[in-house]
Image 1 (cartoon, helix red, strand yellow):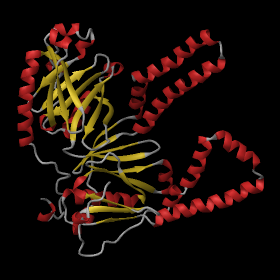
Image 2 (cartoon, rainbow, N blue to C red):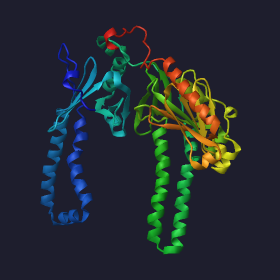
Image 3 (cartoon, rainbow, N blue to C red):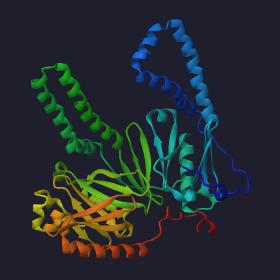
Image 4 (cartoon, helix red, strand yellow):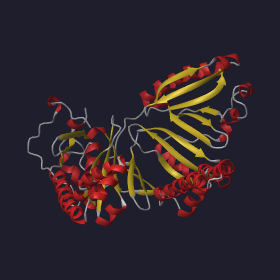
Length: 458
């Protein structure tokens, strides 16, 4: 994150104590010189092989005797020159051995503070702190901290972002969590098997080699094509199961907490007031079981999944926590496009639908894989109407709603008059929605916690 100018820097009355990362961090940084050597070998494998054949056992041992201390020294030096400190208004991170970099992360611009614990980090008892900041695509991170220190620092940063006074923020502690949902492992496994992408990959792994064999009669060609396709199908399914294992959604004053992962545990936060769109996805093979998946668009954040799989009623109760005062429209309330829309999009036009309530703009798309997108009126940034020559011939138009997450929700194939009226009415609803919306707050005051100073909020 780019550091602010000298004129914007906060002058502290007292020196701020800087802290270092966990002592195990140099082991992570020490791989950089080894990665350089491996990168050279991959870039020019022939040259690397020729050089290796010329080396004797003594030369190899001497090279290792030089490389290992250099890697260890590099890891130690990068750890030694990395410091962080929490000031009254920002998190300051200083890194760099040769080229120094100082990141000033303004606390009021924090979107989310996530704690991740990769498998090896869990063994070592450390964790990684990842920071979502408004206006940045890449997350800043502190890797690694002790697990207790990471959780304490996360709680302090959230308290500061909420406006608690600096001298009491470290005493606030982590907010209590009330569990809303936990995804059973059998349900997750069945949902992965019933996903269309899994079956599509498996079908490609069977069909493509079958077509190649009559054309080439080469076993190696068939294996070189079929094995990667089969591996991709298995990897995507297994990867999704491992990543979404033990998915838990809890409610706290900070927002919604999401914990998940079999090997790498991740603790994420859905920031309150920053959710721009909620999508309820219903794959074809899930419908008999009444399951849905809930996805999110969050402004300035990479968090995209709220519920991997759950019964519709349970998922809708969680959506109500993300969008207070919003109820998911029933399928019967969605209006389809006029019948002449079939001349523009045969068959698939039946999957389109629209309903506008007092709180949300809701558009559905998809016939096999249905997706219902909910956009609160207060989150609409702009409204557009588009109409190509073929749609103009059949008096049809599309209405696009743009949100603060750089995403667009589209009501397709609407009657032209209806679309024009929808454009005007939605612009007015968005203005009144933003005017009446409550300001975004990180969390509600907790019992016994000191409130923020007046100077903390402009």
